[in-house]
Image (tube, rainbow, N blue to C red; front, side, top):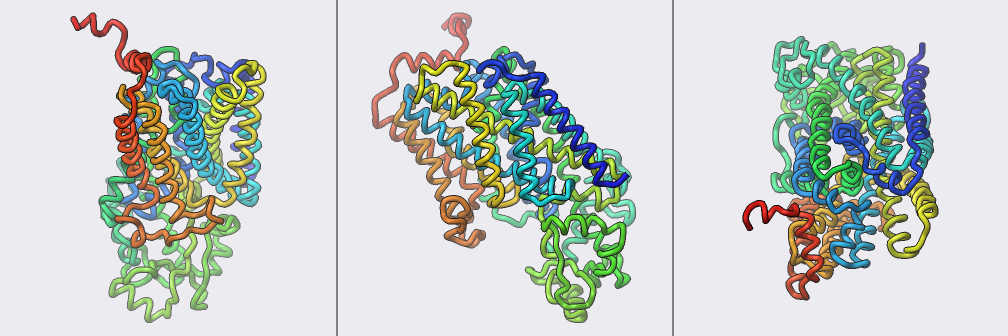
Length: 607
């Protein structure tokens, strides 16, 4: 059976499962569409939350970023998992106790302001659309390879699927679909990781293999990887090379951004009790850890396999790890060798490419952007190398290509294809639900047409979701970076806008509507301006005004890290404005205290 047929079987079977669940769990009311009628158990909600949050960035792109950067990109792991601790302790139970359907609804009621609610909607839309672009990017990458179509065609196929099961099922259908998608993605991520860990280190657990011994050389796996990449002029894999300030700010942006993501927060509105919200966050962290503890091993082994594959196809007689030759594979072998079929397959997508710059019939792989070591410099001179001849290796392909590079069975490759799509589609559905809820429940029901019937509100929610899918797909055709990089920008926007206003809304009785409004505006506008100065892409005619390099960043702070600064600006502006204006009404103070302090707590403690 051909690999294409296997891919179709696994992808088609998973799609049939998702659509079947959506039909079975079709939402018939707004309560089911927005919050699954608040009847989801904590364990199931934790699994659905894990799938909702572990997106294309987690499954496809994160290990690729770690593969090509190493230790410095462990910030993704630390920030994203740490954010769930904040969410469980500081936000989830209190927001569930408030008992509303959407984040902007809480903002509007807590800050007794329709304007604050609308600004909350705008912030939610900006965050969610940016985030969903990263998911559609992952969908396009996966489809382009495994269904052998263009990236743009893959995007439209994925959009059509999401439209069917998300529009039909709402939160009720999406919840059960995400449980199935979690099972698919965790199996798809773990099986090839186990295979590759056994190949390279003899360990069945990838987590142990990362710190184990490379079987062929007898050297520790990470030490071997450091030797390989530094010999080729790359920075050491385990070393810290970037700005410590930026690393800290980026980690914080991911943490507080996670705690402020609207599509994650609304998952905690689906459980029966307040205590279940905290339990759900704990279970979600357990399910997330099953993938996140494997990701560093996947990234490291993917990087090693890429380089070793180039050496294994070498016609120069060099051995992997030699300091006397850059990896080189002949063009003839690339075009004919079965073990290099993965290169031919991924070249078609445009996400992998090579060029014989010096015309010697070989493709040499090394870092031509850094000062090479003495041995590599000699090779460059002797062989008249004109630069790295494998310049295009998209980060987003590493997890998907890893099973092919390692020559794993075809059924493993088919499972990985289904898993990558499950990760991207599960998060896309959650985001689109958050968007549609904000439009139908907060803008239409809460502002434009307060007397709209439940039937028409449900229809408006489905129409809003359909339009959102179309917009996200169009923007996904030209994303501002890799899937994880695009998602990181969304976390920065959530950190600078939603997280501060929720924290102040729950834990401060002094912050008033003026403070909340001006704080949100200051936070998200400052972050957007900083991002667009370096990333361009959206409002500025597709071009950035400043070169996106560390040398040009303000105090060395990258666009993805600026969300932490935006959050501080939000807190500061809200505090200053609130203290310069009138205090909130008494009933609002009582509302805040009722959310945070259980009834009878004072009497029970003698106060």
